[in-house]
Image 1 (spheres, rainbow, N blue to C red):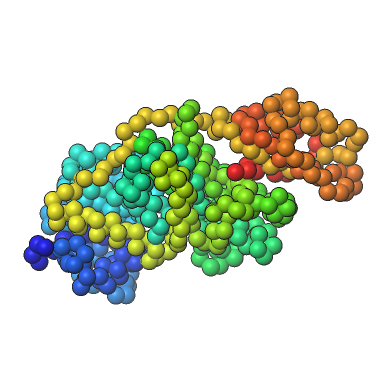
Image 2: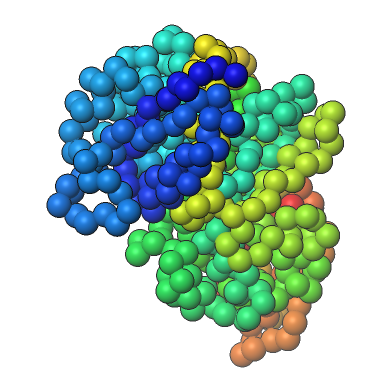
Length: 428
C-alpha cells in the first residue's frame, strides 16, 4: 500500500445528485485510504448561484468560475452532475484535454457525444466513466464493459424510467387512469413539472442508446432510437393485457440481429412470467442475454439522491484506484464495430390492436382480409359487446415488419366502417 497520497476532485453541480456525492465523500473519508490506496478530497464545488445557502457544505469550496477548476493542476478528477449538453460538453472536453479524469451522470451528453468524449479520454490517457448515466444506482455499464465482456450479447431490454413505471403500476394495481397516475407521480416527486422526457420515452431512449453502444460494440446515438411514450395507454388496454396474461411496461429494447442493431423504446405487452413484469413502482431493471452467461438481470433504484450518487462514487473510486496505480485510461471506448442501426419500419414486432368498427355482417372478415393483404397474420380476435351499433374489436398478431403493419392500419382508416383505431401496442 502506498503512502498518504490524497486525490483531489472538483464537483460540478450541487443539486440532488451533487449533494449526495458530496455527502458520500464526507462519509467515506476514513475508509477511502483502505478502499483505494489514497485519500479523496473535494477541493472545489462549482455552482450557478454563490448566494444560495447550502447546508453542510464548506462555503470556501464554492465557486462559479470554471477557471478555478480547469487551471488547478492539483485537481485530478472532475465530477460532472450538472446535466444538459452545454456547458457540460465544453467543460468535460477541456478537462479531458488538460489531463483530468472525468466522472459524469449526464445521460443526455453521453447518448449524443459519448464517442467524442471517449476519444478525447483515450487521446489523453485518462478515465471517462459514466455508470450513473443509466439506471441510477444499478450497476450496468461496468458489467457490460467488464464482467460480461467475453459474451456476444444479443439482447438488452429494460425498464429504465422510474416515473413511467410508477404510473403504469398505479394504472394496473389501483385502476387509475393515466392523468390521475401522473398527478400522483408528480406529487411524490417522481415526475418533473414538465414530464415530457419521461412520459414520451425520451429519457429511456437516451439510456438505451448508451447501453446498446456498449453491449453491441457499435456506436448508437439518441437519434437512432425510436421512442414512443405511454400517454395513449388506457385502462381498457390494461384490462385486455390482464386478460391475455400480460402487463404493459414501457420497455427499452435493444437487439443485435444479423441485419443490424434494433434500438427502440415503446410500451409493450409483457408476459407475466417474464422477470421484468414484476418490477413495480419507481424501480428499474435491465435484462441482458449473452451467449455465455445466458440470462442476467440487474434490478434496483433507478434514480434519487443516494442511488445515483452511489453510482457516481463507484466510478470516482475506480478512477482514484487507477490514479494510484498509474493506469488511467485502461478501459475506454468499446465501440470497435460499425454495425448499421435498423430503421423502425424494418423491425419485426408482434402487435395488439384495439379498434372500433360498425357492427355489420361480414365486417370482421373484411378487416381480417385487409390485414392479410398487408402480410399481417392474426393470432387472436376478441369482441366484447356492441354499444350503439359499434363493436370494439381486439386483435393479436404474429411478428410482422412494422411498415406492413403501418400500411394495414392506413388501409383500415380509409374504411368508413372503422370509427377509430384506439390502440396499437407492441407485444414482447
